[in-house]
Length: 164
View 1 (tube, rainbow, N blue to C red):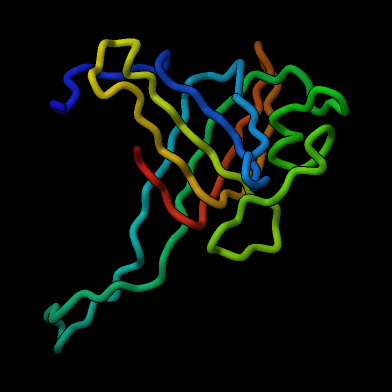
View 2 (view 1 turned 90 degrees about the vertical axis):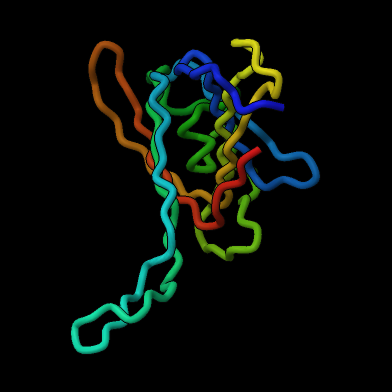
């Protein structure tokens, strides 16, 4: 297949949150969102080794988490019956029985996986959809009143990204 020649836009994206229930994770497709999903793919710290001020080598240092965010339009904070994005990331409401998604990274905090999918079929790509799956993410949320009210979900992922 050839490298895609079709630029993607926010209408092509979809965010899905998944817990760690095995073999089939509980998932929530995020709806009513702004279309501003973003992330920073970081590398490990760099240790610069100098010989009297001249760089002699660069070594790989500590791994760093991947950070990102997205914004949704607030519909309700919580729901005991239907659940909300806040319920999913906080393990509350109808998602209170969710299982942490931490895989090879141990965490005391509840974590989820986040899948960002771009619909390539919508623009005629031969390869179809492409995804970025963020593993072992701990999420925070911030609220802003406005027209409409918004909730921004920020996340740190501790087990990398898998692209497909």
